[in-house]
Length: 142
Image 1: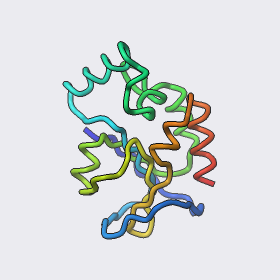
Image 2: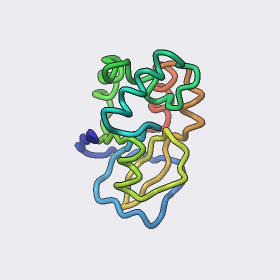
Image 3: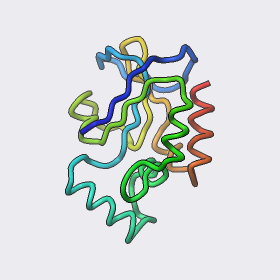
Image 4: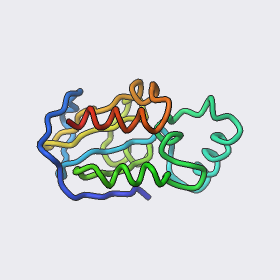
């Protein structure tokens, strides 16, 4: 099940790609993992991270989650952001928004009824650790 936390959106300006034709009613950011939801997929992902971490396809998952949940450092960081957040797996994102072809993982911003790319898969892929990811998000959310 997707985790949603909606509490508001600050008025910072953002750059990115605008996805038109997607009707969005809430403002905030969406973290989209390059992994599918469900127990089987979760167990497969855990095994992949343990036995072959260098080929794991979701750097957002690898940095922000341990084998059994979200890392406390990431939770603490998210609590400092003054923005609403939603966390979706790839299949949940596709089902909810009908978007295909977006390289994942990604972070999108919702504003003015539209989705816009905030952080690309390439940018997330270049993050070596939690500090890099936190710095990237802080910079993009200015």
